[in-house]
Image (cartoon, rainbow, N blue to C red; front, side, top):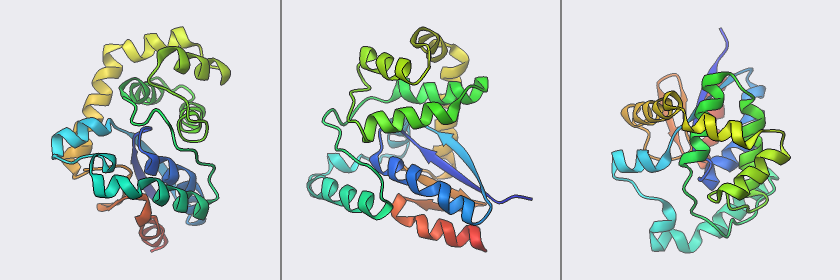
Length: 196
C-alpha cells in the first residue's frame, strides 16, 4: 500500500505555494502519493480563532524576508504579490470543483499558484482571473459556472469544516497518517514520517 501525505492548502498562502514547490520531490523520494486537500483558509481561521501572519505586526514585518529565504532554499521562483491578501473563495471553489468533476486539477493548481506567487497577478479581479484561465487553456465561462454550482460550494465548505475538525489551523498543513505537521518549515518532518 502506497504511503500518502495529505496536503491542506489555500492559494492565498505564500507558504502553501512554497510547500507546493517542495512537496512533490519529497513524496517521490519515498514513493508516496500526495492527497490534495484544498480548503478556504479564511474559514479555518474563523473556526479556530487564528489569524494570518500578515495581520500580526511583529510577524508581518519579517514575512517578506522569510518568504524570500525559503524560496531561495527551494530554488522556487517567487515574487511578492502587490495585491496580497486576496480573497481566495472563487479560486478555492475552482480547486474543489476541479476535483469534484474530475477536471484538470494539476494544471489548474499550477496556473493559479504561478499567477499568484510568481507573476504577482491580482486574482481577486475576475477579469484578471479570466485572462489567466484563458492563457492556460480553461474556458472562463465554464469556470464561472463551475464555481457557482451549489455542489461545488458545498464541497469546499465541507472540506474546510473537515480540516478544522481535524485540527488544521493554518496553511499549509500536512498529515501522514494521523500525524499532523503545520507550516512549510516542518516539511523535513513530513519527509522523515514518509521515510519511516
